[in-house]
Image (cartoon, rainbow, N blue to C red; front, side, top):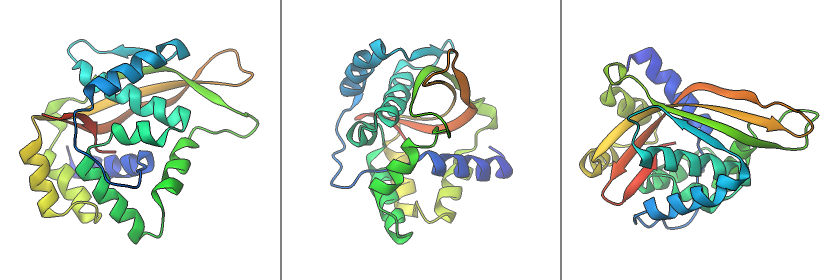
Length: 202
């Protein structure tokens, strides 16, 4: 990932990130996320994944956005990489912001004047081209921002079976409208697969 792109990715991820308080257990989340995704399928979010994208990334990303739509901070927390979650909580405290405030802001990011509510109707998922991804730049950007330290970087690299830059687009239907509109188009988010589950970095 080029330096200019890394800065943009960091900004995009920070605006999409919210965290929960409390102790985070690094336990297998794949079954929970899959069940949550199945339970939410009746709500109408259609998922389109590019051929070859690992299903665990798709299920985790869907669970993440479902939790945002439902304002479910616990469901949201389950999708987050636990060491990152703890580090981001500490970062928020230094900024004078609580995890709950941050999550509330995240949940309202699709709000528009004149509309009482919205629902996410479509999620499109693909991999960002691997040749354009530089993990060292990714970790460096978060270290420079004061979220990661060297110990966390090494922990991530040691625990990770795979780290992928995932690209996604979202459509939402606003109350009273007849057709959904694109609310996110081609954003990136870094995801990690470990022995304990598949998670998001932000």
